[in-house]
Image (cartoon, rainbow, N blue to C red; front, side, top):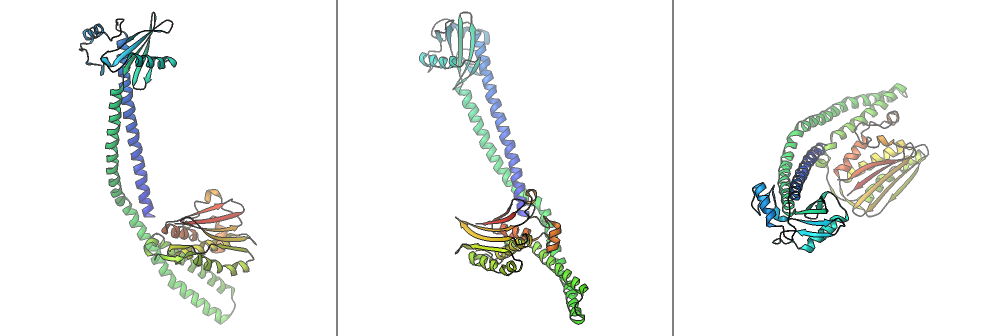
Length: 413
C-alpha cells in the first residue's frame, strides 16, 4: 500500500508538471508565431500604401522612397522583415493579371508568383498564410492587388525556438522526476512509520488475545463435559470461535503489505493445486444441496506461492458458498490465455450493486452487513485475496448483474 501511495504521488506530480510545461510551451510557440505573423502583415500593409512603378521589378524607386520614409537602406529589414522578400500581383477589374512586382535577384519566378496568386483567388480572404508566404489583398481603383512576403525565415525561427524549449523542458522534467522520486520517499516516510506501528499493534493485540480466548474455550469445554448439554456454554463456545476467526484474520491483515517479502515463490502445477482445493468443497456442496461445477484445464504451471494461491481460492470459494442462494449453483474455472492464467469463481444469488463492486476489496467492508454477521464474516477475506493477487503481479475484480449472479475473476501473469 505504501508503494502504491508513493507511485501515485509521483504519477500525479509528474502529470501536473508535464501539463504545465506543455501549456507554457504551446503558449510561447503560439504567441511567437502570431507575433511574427502580425509583424509581417503590418509590413505588408505599409508596403501596400507605398507607390509602385508599373514594371516587373520591385523597383529601385520604391526602395528609395522606403529609405526616405523609414531610414532603412535597401536590403535591410523593415519591422523585422526584409522588403526584398516581398512581391505582389496586380489584377484589373476583370480579374486579369496586369503586372507582377518582385525582386529580380530573388529565387522567385513570375510563373511561381502567378501560381500563388491563383491559389489565393480560389478562396479569397483579406489576409492569410499560404505555405511559407503571408499575403494580404488590397482593393485598387482599377482592380485588386495581392501582396506576398516570404515567411520561411520567421517560421524556421519559431520552429527552432519550439524545439529548443522542448529539449530544455524535457531535460528539466527529467531532473524534476529524479527530485520527485527522492522527495516521495521522504513524504511517505511518516505514513510508512505510522502504518508499521499499526501493523505491529494489530499483530501484538491479536497474539495477546489468543491466550485468554484459549483459556475461555478450554474452560467452557471442560464445563460442557462435566454438566452436559447447556445452551449458555454453547453460546460461549460459539462466540469464542468467532473471536478466534477474527484474530486469525487480523493476523493475516497485519501481513497484507508484507506478502511480497514473506512469500516463498516457486514453480508449481497450478491445475493440481486448484483442483485439490476445489474438490475439498464438494462435501459442502452436497450438504447444502447446491450445484457445484469444476472446470480446470490441465498442465497449467505458475511461478508463485502455492500456499497463498490455495488460500486465495479458499477465500473466494468460501465466499461463493456463503452468499449463493438456496439450491443455487457455484462454479470454478481455471484456464490459460496466452501468458495469463484466469481463475473464475461464480455463484448464483443476490448480486453486488455496481457502486459497491470496487469497495468489496477494502478492509472491513461488507456489502451486506447483516448477512456477513450471520455467516461470521468480518470483511477481511476479499482484502486478503486482493493482496495475494497483487503480490503475484495479478489482478482481481468482480462482475455482477446486481440481481442473479456474482463472479470473481483473478488474472495472473
